[in-house]
Amino acid sequence: LAAFHAFNLARTPNFEPRRGAGVPSYVAGAKTPLLYLPVRGGPEEEVTGWLAALDGVAVEDLPTGMNQKQLRQWKRSMPGHRSFTVLRHPAARAHAVFCRRVLNRGAGSFGKIRDILKGQFKLPLPDDPFSTTYTTERHREAFEGFLAFVKASLAGQTALRVDASWSTQAQSLTSFAEFMVPDLVLREEELDQLPALARRLGHGAPPACVAAAPDQPHALGAIHDAALEALVADTYQRDYLMFGFGPWRG
Image (cartoon, rainbow, N blue to C red; front, side, top):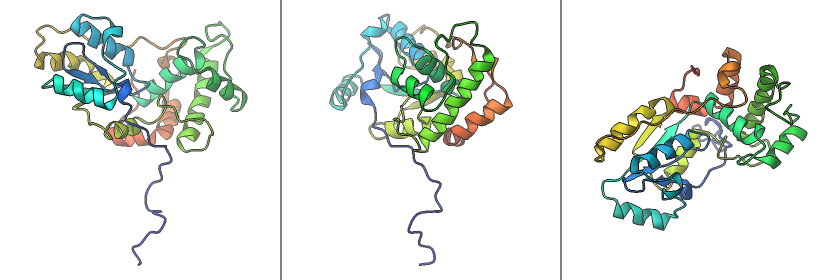
């Protein structure tokens, strides 16, 4: 009885909701037996662009949106298939999501969430992020507010959904494992290993995977320092622990 913990208080609590395996988001090679399991907020455009260039097709022609039955059929039709995913440093990932989903007011942005962050959480978001009045100082202040929101979101302290774009990458990989485990887990700085993977599957001269362009309107390097890194590490403790991330180096 002395060793019995009714409430499991010795275990580090994790309030982040479980996610589905996300099979419809998987992207397959048009001809090459490769399957990409994208972690939202990562270098998705760069990797899918590489997959398309590998087989000489448009990105729109890559098989995706499959359900579990269709994916099993794809696997059976592609003997020797390999699957992979790509992790991004938590600081770069959070900043990319902030710029593309929150600051951005165009396609792909989270308009309703942006309005809630601006009104309810008092994030100092600009009406025009490309205005000359939106300085790096204002950008850092807004990004710090976003990190505070994400930390509360992951702890289950907000009514807003925990979007896959800012959920932990550890949770994403756990979700993948509900259906399948990727053969290869790369870091973004290891994308130069993708051509070697393609060569093992029969490609003689596979293209290189291009690096992601700096975020707009301000790059992470313009605001990053030890204090900001500490905020990111506090927000994404689970990812730093699980994957051994060190400070972001640019």
